[in-house]
Length: 188
Image (tube, rainbow, N blue to C red; front, side, top):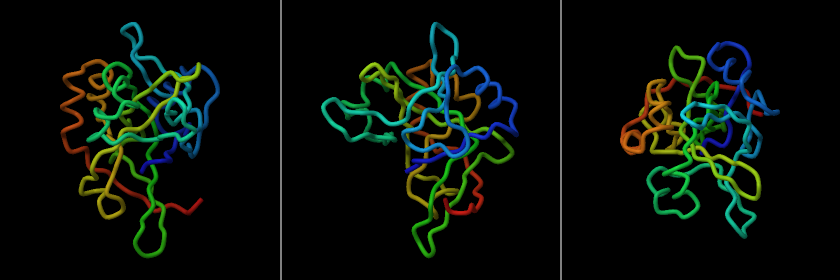
């Protein structure tokens, strides 16, 4: 679920500012699970963008996780520490999902009237490298006909709360996420 999302340089001033402030090289356009992309973390009381690779790695394993299920991540050793102390926000222009009924169709999902979509995430430091995952939850009505999971999409007001408040984090994970709009895309 939500293995790919998009990060476009044009169309949104807030997203452009985040990209301009991000140090290091990162992927734009269609971002794949292990690409390096900007994430937002809270560091010394300030929200800081960093270029970070996607997908967590488990110690001693070569298997990676590019998403974490909101319902089970508190129980999983791979995500537990990050949930309490290493939360991040993944800025994007939207995310992709493919229909699995009828002909395979690719859709891009966005917030209505917005050129930026924030997704809740976690990060870890592993083997000298920082990595991130996107948190997913049960799909809401705007998503369910395409897929039964969706990212935990954050409203602008929730972005800072996700990064800074453990109490608000729990509330966010237990509420239905905002309705999205979908647009059919060409397969790639």
